[in-house]
Length: 223
Image (cartoon, rainbow, N blue to C red; front, side, top):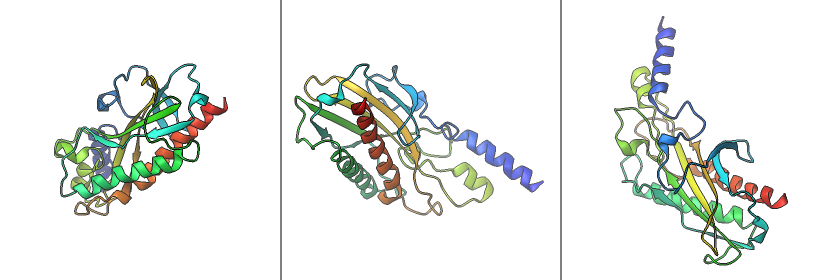
């Protein structure tokens, strides 16, 4: 009987956490960072992860001789909390920048500014929404998608973290958009509700995103 009750509670809590059931970022969770989401299609990244993306038909990526990585940002701008302090937020964007530069430098020289023959990468860490009313808005964006409903009802101490990104790729000469991607991933589990989120908890996700972006570019280049 207890097992059935536990299962029912888990299912109900999972449904309450919007977006958890889907591997893709749902349209009602888009942040507004991208100017146009209408052309995004469900796809798979080179690592096999589900993504929403669009690539300009006929784009010739071989024309890009270098890449400029714009500093990553949070969109919308968050307010630090005890759970996710400002030092963690700063550490996440710093590490995302580092991961992107490290991976893209394997495929193209890094440029200091946009210009002819330059691919511009504009990344953001974006909001992931949830329907749990007991959570304050920022407690579910962009990192801590905390399973508070599950934890409170069942005594489960582990808390899940989730992070999402939206990125736009532009021609450094014309400033035209040549590709867009939206995806999310699971960060490290926190031991309990008192544990503070740290930048290192998101490193594996950020590394994976950067690697997939470069592999996607290389696949287009090889066509």
